[in-house]
Image (cartoon, rainbow, N blue to C red; front, side, top):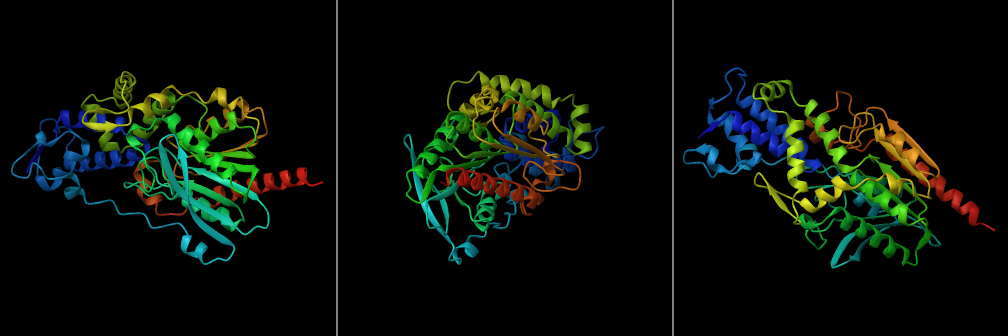
Length: 414
């Protein structure tokens, strides 16, 4: 089998790169590096034919269809060439928690519109209704632990375990169309996700073992946007923690993200794109314009089916007015090596929030909330996901919540 490694292939790579949700950026970078190994000679890359054992990997993954491959193996799937991604280890400590007499785990369902979502409620030993933390993951087809089939980062699973160790109950759930939850992920928009989170809060407030005045929300990435919306419309929340949150509209976030992620691509790939006169940022601008012109819940961009409704709503959404409406305490944390959300937004978040707001940029922390010693790059996401969520972030978030709990307890004590 042989594959054309010319300009058209790289154009398709760029199109694929800009059309993906955030957790697929690592995959796009991996593709770029594999294409680079396929065609190492920059000067002669255009129109060059590569041997099958080096080049077959670039086909279906890039989303260009089988027409680029000639020969009897044209229908070979990409995963046959690349092999499945190594799953990240199960970083949650559920088995340990289940053995603890102080912690109980429950499957809990919530109803939101026509969808029924399912998640894990972690309750700690308490003699009276107590505080609970709603955990909201980032964008993409994410389950309750912040895992996808492509990349398991375990953020919310680890957060729940850490909070339980600190005596704090929590609830996290599978997104629509993921895991045990009903609905269709591809047709779900940003504001559907906000409604789902609001329904989760209503369900928690109705429980006899939950203090309705001491519900906190921790959101990561898209989850931070959702937490912002909840806090803006629900002043009775006890506090919100924004992890890798943003203070700018989604279209600016995507443009900033593409610029910084593309800057982290391997140098040979950058050279190839320059030789082929490919500009990732300009190509993305065209792609975003195409998505904004869509009207359906889903759309196909160069054969890749995307959740167009979510992208349109995300691009148009400006969190600034909601940040200005928040009356509950806010803790905003992000990493100095986040290349998907601008770390400088932390300062603007606290400038906009009129209530008590604490912001911190944690050194060497990436968007996956792991410490990374080297230069920030999506190329290391797979390795990062095998490590634990940064202990500094976990301790800062739980300490802040416990301080808020203590404060509310003190205020309500006669």
